[in-house]
Image (cartoon, rainbow, N blue to C red; front, side, top):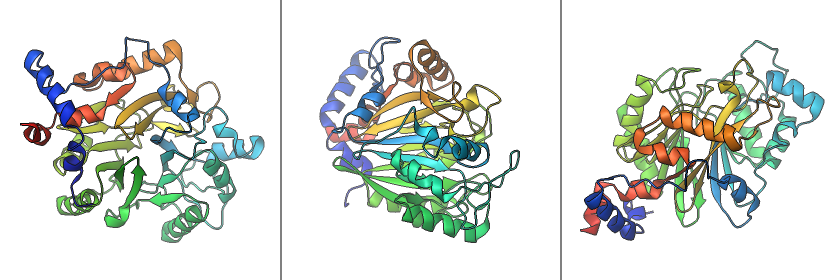
Length: 363
């Protein structure tokens, strides 16, 4: 790739820019975010794309943890148990998750109420069969069995057909993996900052490498305060740094609940997607998650999921439950994104077309 992401994508968006400039002249709506219909009228776009073999998406989910009580359920119900209400069986799709565990060679079941997670490698084929493709190891549990356990996890995941990416303590060019989405190359960077944050120089070097080899840059980051429904100051400061380094989209995890969504300059920040598969049952928010589907036109569909009805078995929210969830998420998010969140769809291409450098190209 010889062009940086925002420039290369910009060339395909000049027509959109003209619309943006017109809207800004007559209505002042600089960001031009598009709602996909009236309140409560959104159909499940992700469900449609899952069943359409001609649709290609990169799906993002939050924390996936197959140890402790989840493993007990797998032992009784079978390894495919968590995916019976929702899977991504479509060879066109990629599915990215935060893999919150180690897969050590010498596995022993994790006792309840303990926090050293070990996953049985025999559970991995069902995860693969459900459609998962890319697993981030940039979190605070992939070192639960030390460096040796981490290396065994990486090897095992590769052997099972996954793409593991990211490291629990390092952020470097090896933290970057690339995904082809239509005619675009997407750089996906795994980052963990609960204990230490990379220097500005390191962040600049890694994001520059990603930008020079891709059209769209996404950071998949483990951060934030557990169980807080809104982001903290440290998250926003890092998000500002990543935005200043031209990262396009930031997708967070670790808080175990869904946090707010914000726009920093032209960088779209999903502070936390919450749990996807986890053995936390003590409140509704920890049994809810947000799934994202990014398509080749840079449309991002938002689909809330819940495992409240059947523990550790996520399913799509529907009807009034979905409407209420998205409405509440919109209320605690950036008001410029409110209508898009309520309608379950954010048009990132429109945000990108509103950037100053694209506007300059249209002059």
